[in-house]
Length: 114
Length: 114
Image 1 (tube, one colour):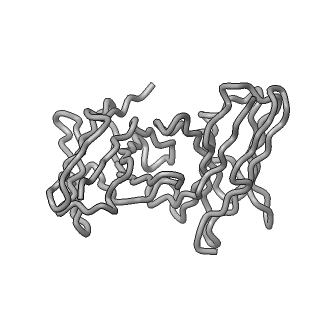
Image 2 (cartoon, helix red, strand yellow):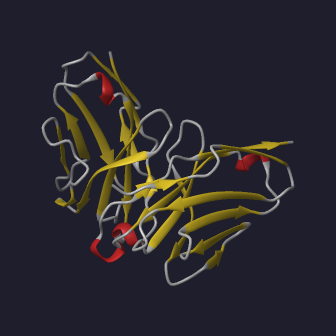
Image 3 (cartoon, rainbow over the protein chains, first blue to last red):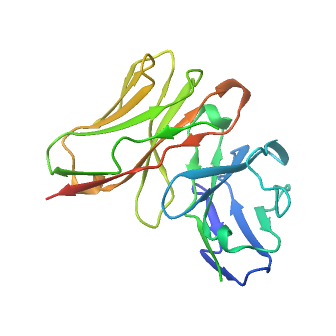
C-alpha cells in the first residue's frame, strides 16, 4: 500500500497487562522505525529494522519491550506488563533508504494504561 | 544524550505572513536534519530535509536554513495559510551513514490566524 498502516488505533490496558501493536509498512520499503510520543511532545526512538533484521535498538527498554518484523507479516511492538508511563502514542514509520531519506509515518496507536 | 530543542513552543501568525520556526541542536557532528509537520491526531509528515554540506534548501513555500557555526536550524514558511496550522518538529541524525536514530525536538505549535 501507499500508506503506513497501524492497528489498533486505540488500545486500553490495565497496568500489568500485555499490549501488542501492529504496523504494515509501505510496500517496497525496507526500513521500519518505531517511536513513542508522550503528551504530543518529542518523539523517542525505540527501534528500527532493515527487513526482518534489527537495525538499531538503542532506544528500547529491553526488559519489557520487544519488536519483530517477520516476512509476509505486519511488524509488531509488544509491551509486557505495561506500566502507567507507557501511556503514549506509538508511531511506526517506514523508509526505502533508512535514516538518510524520508520516513513515512503511520497514524499512530494511542496506548492508555490504566 | 543528544539535545534538540526549539526556541518557542508556540507561534501565532496572520494568514499571508511568513513564519519562522527555530531549532537548536547540540551535536556538532550531526549531518542530516528533517523538519516534520504534525497535525492533530495524525503522524508526522515530512516537509523538507537538509544535509550538513548545505546551508539552505528550498521547497514549495518552505525554506530550511542551517547554521552549523551556532548549531541552529530554521524553517521558513512563506505566505502562511490556515492549513499550515500544526506542530512542527525538527529532527537530527548525527550518524547518517551508519543509520542511527533520529533525535526529535520538542515541537513548536503554529497557529495561523485568518
